[in-house]
Image (tube, rainbow, N blue to C red):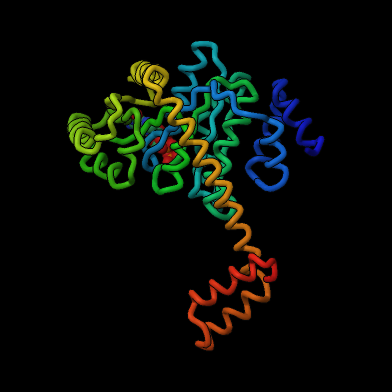
Length: 320
Ligand SMILES: Nc1nc2c(ncn2[C@@H]2O[C@H](COP(=O)(O)OP(=O)(O)OP(=O)(O)O)[C@@H](O)[C@H]2O)c(=O)[nH]1
Ligand SMILES: [Mg+2]
């Protein structure tokens, strides 16, 4: 293990915020240093409460996150936020917005906020998220909030890194249906109808409750509550916090917590394998063998599947 990474881990454990930020970059970037960092961190204590906040763009996830930060700080606990945005790898626009909205907490030493965007392919984010959580736990944050935009498979996988997943929708015809289409109904532990200062709250609640009754045959005796909030003025935040706490109690009492930790371990290992395979494929597809095979596909000497087989054969022999 390289001493630089070990030093970063030690400094992070001592509460050095600069080291923490650098260590997060290390695990984000992957590769050799990330491997060493994870080894130096050791097994996860799994004591932190990890709350995922997902939902459509603009639903109020960042505003809710800011309100939850304030709620956690009122108890005296420290809290870290990972704002994960798979869609803004190039512009960083949404992330900037998040920063601005959470600025009220910028000067608070008990709050740490970090944005992560995809670099290259999405698989990296699935791999990096649990490792970033492990870093934050080592840094002594008993609460980690994960904000992700819930528009695709990766986001759903990222939300799966949490103990308690909040799915945020807004009042208005069809918002619950959209959440259903995006696969969010299955992953939600608590449903939040945010912007409850607008029309259509009762209908959205009814929609959600009906769909939840239909879709929930998961043999778990937790009935996801539907909570109405107005993130921008704090209405409903206390009730939301109580729902998060009762879900945590349910996880511990039912044995579901252990099951989720297992599922997360499987997902984390799978994420690493996926990332490594993708990196190997990227290398092979930048080599001369790949160019030769592509030319043969163009010349109709080979079909693309046969070309792929041949490339993988060469990859296994290390001769691409
Ligand atoms: N009226 C009303 N507006 C809200 C409420 N919560 C958030 N907003 C506004 O909705 C807009 C989007 O809020 P964000 O918190 O940025 O939403 P988000 O889900 O984080 O957005 P992205 O990260 O871009 O997907 C902002 O202009 C907020 O001020 C609410 O409860 N009521
Ligand atoms: Mg946001």
